[in-house]
Image (cartoon, rainbow, N blue to C red; front, side, top):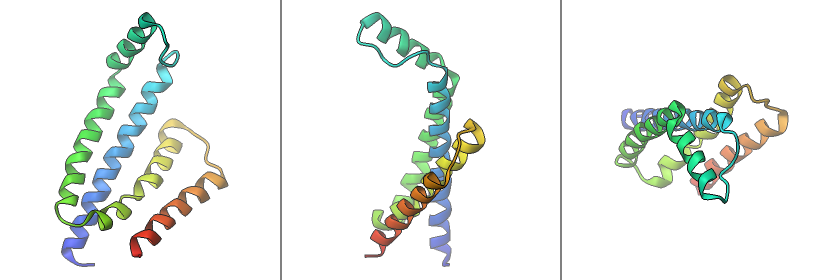
Length: 127
């Protein structure tokens, strides 16, 4: 692996790790909310107020914002058609973080489906 490709892969892995971390924080926010957004103005304002007061939402936004910086750095070094397939590691990271940090169950079908999506992205990138 060339030095520039190694740096590119590292940038994408850091970006996608930060994005997966942000998604995990968003799910932690959703887990503490009492209900979905409602059609009444009072309920909607209450929902948004709870979201904005959650430290998890701010950690998620910060994490994803930092991930965007690394993603843009990767994009500045290579074509999107190369960078994006490398970013498919995001699917594995989200699944791993959901299992480890959120205690979600992973069965054979979820794991196989995720691997097939990643494999499909890599195949498309090769064409």
